View 1 (cartoon, rainbow, N blue to C red):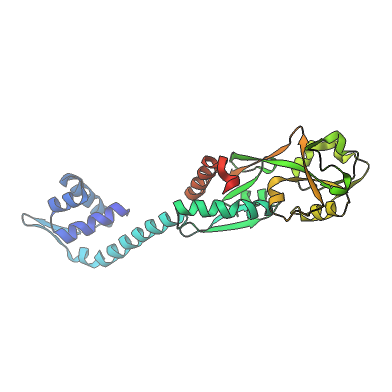
View 2 (cartoon, rainbow, N blue to C red):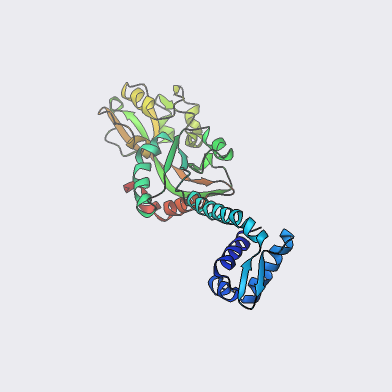
Length: 290
């Protein structure tokens, strides 16, 4: 028995009139009569006695009415709770992203988003290679990563994060604004294989002096560059997440290089996840200032 039938039973029992019930339910009397006939056929006994003075519960109808009331209340509460969950008021919106993004972008994004949806609760999961699998396994609702790690059913580019060459000041490059990949091969290089954008700078893998650092953030690379161990390639957001040593020079790459950051959503995203994705896309131009 569905919610509409339960509501009809309770309305007719309370009003004692098919006409009055039809008005309350915003339908016709014939529709109420048809629903009542369907209910009684399903139950196998009459629920109401009909007369010119209206309708009254039969003994059988009176016996089931407490259960009808309980069932209708349970379905109402179920619908309310489901609505809260879909709106993000119960289940935390689980967002997976990198350490640099969680430090630089997420605080401002969460603050701005909650001004529109104050009841949304966030859960930020920081990681790297394992994040796409977490989305596929249903452990995440949203994935905010670079395009090379995109997965799921839906992908929405959000912004371009510029890559910088981070050079020790002792290399004497501070007066320059940019440096080419070909020139970088003349210096010791510090690469993090977890940074997928390095796939676009394959010549550096063949440089004579390459130190590889498997780390989830850029701090080890910065510290190594500060110790004159080589030039590192680090995205702008990662640099914002760290304290830049004074003996470091930042140079743009020539030609410029960026990593595309965007959102991944599963095949059937939560409504609040879709709202969050729409918010980020609409505010992509100001995300770096949030």
